[in-house]
Amino acid sequence: MHKIQHLISWETIMKKAEKTTRVSSGKRNPEHLVLPGKLSLSYPHAAILLILTFTFLLYAGALRNDFMIGWDDGEYLTAISGEGSINVPEIFSSFHLGMYQPLAVLSMAINYKLSGPEPWIFILTNILLHLMNTALVFLLMRRWMKSWIAGAIVALLFAIHPMHVEPVVWISARSSGLYALFFLLGLIAYDKYTDQGHSLRQYLYVLLFFVLALFSKSMAATFPLVLLMADYLKQRKLRWRLLTEKIPFFAVSIIFGLVAIRASASFGHITVLEQDYNFFQRIFLILYGISFYILKLFVPLNLSAIYAYPEISGGKLPAYVFSSVIVLIAAIAVILYRRKYRREFISGGMFFLITIGMVLPLFWSRIFITADRYTYIPYIGFFMIIGRYAANLWETRNTIDKTTRRMMLSASVLLVIILGASTVSRITVWKNTPTLLSDVIDKKRSDADMAHGYFYLGNYYDAENNAAEAIKYYDLSLSRNPSYLLALNNRGILKGKSGQISTAIADFDQAIRIKPDYAEAWYNRGIAYFQAGEPEHACADWKESASHGFAPARQAIGRYCTGEKIPGQLQIPGIEDGSGTIPGTRDN
Image (cartoon, rainbow, N blue to C red):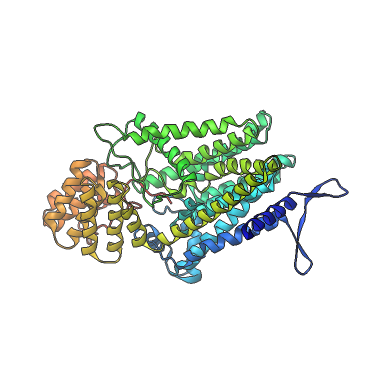
């Protein structure tokens, strides 16, 4: 009985929340919530404050998490830990881990100067970015959907969905939160631009926020297409002005796109997969990726830091890849079925497809086919659909009997509790590198996933100067995938460093047999031959590596193979972690 009374009282509060008070000017202002001490707060403001408070409490436990060594965090610490003042020009003129995201690097450099290598300040910054982004989502949705209740629902889902844990608690994913901040500010500024007579000042704000987003993460390049989607949502008439005003945005996107390509090329970020996919198979991989994100939206279970590419067997993809088309067709049917608010539903679907498009594996690939962090901005599109549908149900609740209303409200509260609990659970997984990768291995999703998990654990122990443990995990990785190029290469490097030259050469031999254009393996085998006192073989391998564009090989040739007496020793390479010196990045 007590529980029913509680639900009824909450329903009464929500009824009051949607009432409005007319003022003499004819504008509608939300009814205010009266607080102790004669204070008052509008219901929209109260809603977003509750959401932000709840979100911070969920993520507070992440402040006890550590750096993810061997999972990019260590590389960023090395890049930003120099003595003296922050070298801003160098940050903006350099690539980091094969990516150009200087604002993200700058923000981490500031964290380092404030507290040194203390992970909590880095994580706190990520959490604060997430809170600001949540507030911006609320403001944007309130403008786009003309309903603060719908905006609050979208903001709540954005704030607490478990798929968003990775871009918040992983320090190296700073770029996701930072680009989202400027991306959302740009969309809000554009909405004001279209509502306020197309002022030049507002237009320049939009362009500024867009550029700042691009300085944070290359995924922001989809911004001009999202502006066109916003035009469709706002029912702007198709005129030349609508198109010409986007030209500067597309031009900037192209420029930053070329910079991103150059950054990737400088670090060798060309597709390296354990199997090649033809164009037809890549189409189905794209459909699979989209369906994967849709399923995880509604059923965020079995989440992982690693989602390996489907393995080809007999020249064919697994059946589940093809069956993913069913999920996509169902999603399209739901969007098109609704006649009321169809424009908002279609806009939400377009928003998702546009913003997720850059990370779908059509013309290039990353180490993993999908990643939780890629949904940070794109999921807003689906949350729009859910928010509009839920707000519409609330607006028409008087046509539903009380029992059904109570059940719906109870289900909503239960959903929030489940999502919140799942988020807290996921945060604990990201405590440190061993807990994260052990989670990947324990779930036993596939041999490919486990091979990646063991591989990155090997990298972690190498970073901890525990070569024996690192080799053990590389062995385990290769037991799951004997053709894992990176594990072969890294194990060969460690064996070479420990004086096991012949076994190191054997690892590089196998890697080269699998991928004859694997420049790093040629280079590393050359080092092994050089250590073994066989400079002729070393120079031959370095020349082969250089022919594939590997810069360190050219340097080695100039120093040891031209007859010139250039002082200095041959530098033995560091371990390849899948995010730096090898093709195929995790793309933070």
